[in-house]
Image (cartoon, rainbow, N blue to C red):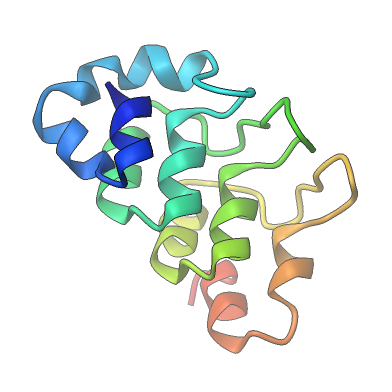
Length: 122
């Protein structure tokens, strides 16, 4: 349910239709290529879905096994999704956790004041 909703760009709809029941299972195991539901929510800027997933116990620093070991926070920063960045940081995501290629959320945010402030919890 969550993966198909993500493909349609409506993760929030999945949560309202009961898809959030799957969140605990889906966030613990991969949906596609090692990504969890929180990877999809954060990378797509779906803050409401990210909140629901975090509340359901999604791991904020879960690494994606493919392609490069990225975290939901790295995807949120890469997409410029400031609200998702703030939510993940408040939930304990590590702004300095590197992907397999050595990229960190803080490094990707360099030169972007609003994202850097979000990473600092401001």
